[in-house]
Structure formats: C-alpha cells, structure tokens
Image (cartoon, rainbow, N blue to C red):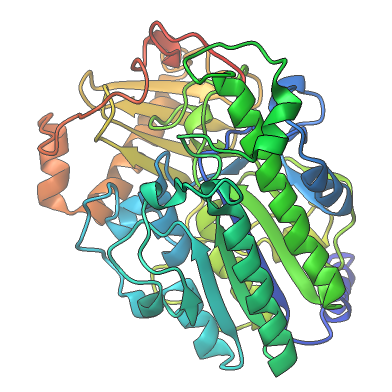
Length: 456
C-alpha cells in the first residue's frame, strides 16, 4: 500500500520540477577518466578523483546534483561510444563496434534528437564539437552543428582557443540565447575535444602548473598540460552553466556531464581501448530540478540510457523506437537514488576486437562482470563491489555463474553482429587487424601485463 503513494509523489515532484518542456544540456568530455576531475566519484575512494586536477565548477555542479560512482560508457573508444549515445543501443546491437562500421542495425531517423522532435516539434537541437561519424549531425536531427568533425579538428593554432573549448562554449551560449528569445526548448550536446591528446591549454592556465614534475616528453610536463587543459574545460563548463542562470532557465534545465570513454587511474584496471573498468567507467554528474544536491548514487548506469532519459523528461509516455535498450534515469534521480533504472535488457554489454592486443567482450549483470578474451577463449569473472580493481578472477570458484554470463554475452553478440561475424569471432578471425595497442594487454586476473598504473 505504500508503493502507490510513493509513485504518485514522484510524478507530482516531476511536474513541479518542470513547469514546461525542459531544456537538456548534455556535456561530453573526451577521454576523461573516472579520476579525471577533482570530484570524487566514489565518496570513500580517494583514487576516484585526481589530486592534480582543479575543477571548481564541476565541484559546484556536484554539490547541486547527483554524482554517480558506477557510470559507464557504452564503449572504450570514442566513435562507438558516441554512436551508442545517439541511438540508445549497445554498440553490438547497433552493429557499430568499430570506427569503420557502416551497416548499422537502426536508421538515423530513430536517433535521440529525431525521436525527441517527433515527440515534441517545438524542440531545437545543436551539437558543437567532436562528432566522429559518417552520418551528419543534421541527419540525426540537429538544427545547428560544427558538421562532421574528427580528433584533429580539436588541435588549434589559436592560443586563445586551445582544443576549441572556448569556441565551442561561445557557440553554445549563442545557441541557448537564440532559443530562449524565440521560445523554444532545446537539446544541446557539447562534445568537447578536451581532454583528448594532444593536450593544449591557455598559457595563463598552464602557468599555474609549472611546478609539476615532468613525467614525459611534453615540455613543462605532460601532466601539467593535461591538468591545465582539464581546468580550461572546467572553466568552459562554468561559463555554460552561468549562461543558464543569466537566461533564467537553470530551473528548467537538465544538466548531464560525463565522458565518452575512460583512461588510466590509480585504482581501476585497464584504460582507454580495453574493457577493464578504467576504459569504460566514467565521471558523471547530473543536476536537475527536484534532485537533491550533494548526493552520491551507486546504481550502475550507462550512456545509452540517455535517449530514454531525455524522452522521459521531455515527453513522458512517448514510445521509444523499437530496439532501444537504455532505460530512463528519471525515477532514479527524483527518488534520490532509491528507484531502479528499468531497461528492456538487464545487462550491460561491451565489445572490442580492434586496436587492442587481445580482442575482448564483456558483460555486467548485477554486481558481476565477465570479461571474455576471444583469442584465449578465457572468461574472467569479477565481483565489482568487492573487487573494484578487478584483481581476483572468480571464474573457477563460481563456474556456473561464469558459464551463464558467458552464454548470455555470446547470445547478445550473435543477435547484434549476425551469424557470419559471430562465427568468425568464434574461429578467432579478426579481419580488421589488431592495430596499435592502446595498452599492454590483459593478463591473468584481468591485470594489464607490464603496465604501470598512473592516476589521470
């Protein structure tokens, strides 16, 4: 009898939170690791924040919103992760598992923004910054964009606009001002090039970090430039949030901050390009009217949940396109982290077989994650709640669970990739080659072989 009043209370809270169609501001950093900000993603884990980073605007956002300790990217590399976000599906279901994928299993007419506009035609949308796909932003519903852009577009020669961070921010401010003036709710995605290599920063910001030791070949220090670039990104985030206040729309705007994939940390196993937690666990902060500030949420969420979440806030009850696998964060947010996220599938799946020494796939279900290595046919099982660093392989201790997860993982991949591609995997054929190694490969127990962990 208590459940019904609670649900009604959530519905009333949602109505009170947004008096009209909400704006959505989605800020996507590039290659920012779980510990890539000064905000602790996990309150009791010092290694979930970076000691050398200074991100006061993200700290303020965290104090005003909810911080997620188990937020995941849909993939460990840029392109695939970004495709999954736009289409609301795992990369394998979408058949977008590497940057050369062309035959997606869903039409761009089913993209997040196209679906949002079907639900409410008053919305306007913009995408500024890194895009990375052959489909144009316009085909996915964006009214304004920088077009098809790649990593190299972020490396500028303008000393006043390193990584284009400040230019992206100016375009965002102009877009928001125009929509408010014309009376349109908006979806705005800011895909910053920071903090992807090669690092760039304002000279004035870099000066603050001159005393940092030089661990590499980057002049005053790789870490110094990285820390300065991170602070510049944080400054830009602060400018965008300030604009929300100046336009008097902050109380009607859902703000989401996260990254497209991960990187090395002092705590997590692996990094960008592989499916250890370092490659896929992300910083995430969400601010929303009706959400209590300063709250940490340990519920696992994933970036392809974004479509379902945006539609649930903007047009509750509007049907999602067939095949969408993400679930809405709205009940979770409005309940202070108490309500679960309900998805059509109760698992997270990742697939990475190119540009990595050991082709691999992974599945997370509940507290457990199975990492499957295709060349050795080995399944490594980890309890992520009690083994954050993925140091203890439990597959031999709990073989039934390992076998069950392995079977579910393979069934998911077969359905998405198709029989022919899946059969090639089973035979150990990886026709696109393994390419440059993003790391040293996965060793026994899931640890990187020969790789020294460093905080990012």
